[in-house]
Image (cartoon, rainbow, N blue to C red):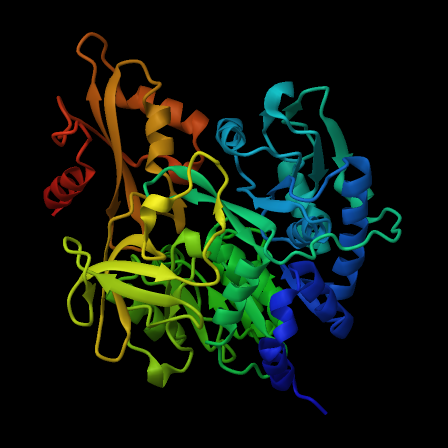
Length: 550
């Protein structure tokens, strides 16, 4: 009789998987693991069989009711939940492009997304506060109660807190649908449309190489190759593969670890309703014999600061966390307090958030860096000035390429060619490699800011602040606070004729930006430093602000 470990190994080595779409892989695993949960949602098991049935109904309803065609975009503004899996996999079945979005997205932020890409159908929670006009181009909106799949007690509590009051406002031309009508509807013989493995399957919104908010497009092949590379770094599971997630699902790494990897492995993701419910998630890890956990350096520090109780977890082989902003102090304190090894990884959004990862085998790890490139990924370090390849020891610019590299940006005006050198993508980060081929990230030169474990576009924040009366110029930077987080700092040059105030800036940002995008600090200067070409020197502002804090 085959063991689960043998099944995982055969799945990893199966050449047909590289030619299959995501829905096809999910369906294969669903047929093998009908009663096995794909997701344990705040303690409630939702099986592969149940999700498969609802996915097929949703796919047919999307196709017939909203005439969704192959290649069209479906926005999914939901947290990690059964509803997210159903929506994502239904999009894959009909060949649509899934666009994960923050479930707390506000109207201004959605307008920014819609200015970059067209979304035909938006799936979101009934508690949304969105206001969408008729010119947005959205054909339909499907509303779901997030508590529908929660355990009874949690569902009652969540309902009492959120209520049923409508806080949204949608134009009358937009057709509204109820999520339950889509997942419990009739199923016909709708064929799988996503047979082309290189076709667009998902779009992740993230700051690009220069800090602009961009839609990064990935094919099924990109997504599956990334999951395959990650899976090869894992230790054999005792039973069915289980991973607990703290990362938001609309981030590149969160999407890969929390959605794609469980589907690819035929395993389970474990999550709580609230991301910050760390104690309950640790209890689930212990209760359900979880293999791994994924968390940002910010999450690890929050667990330590809040003194979240150690649940006596014996099954966890490690917690995956990004090397960037993970200090030695936080890493060592976490491993000491919880007895769980931290497995560092590194990646950029253009490569689905993971390109390097330490081995899950502790004897092969070197703390302080993300280790080796994933299987299939090539990396090199070049001199910043000469562009010559650096062999080992010295610091230089990290270049990467691999099968998970995006197929392009959403905007046709941007092809990203300026970021490629000899077929390698310029990560914008500085790194070094040692004599064993292990990589260490030395500094980040990308303009993106990591706030609460989420990459934020400084340009998006700057465009909001620039609308405030009395602001002449603004530069937004992130300051490492040593606790796994970068504090967003806005440096402002006020106009000479009209003044502005911190209270006015805070008020505007609180209306137009999500909490994790709002600056923690506002600094005022008569002038901002500029280059000869007139570009604001953010690097200089960053160094000056760091030295002032120290």
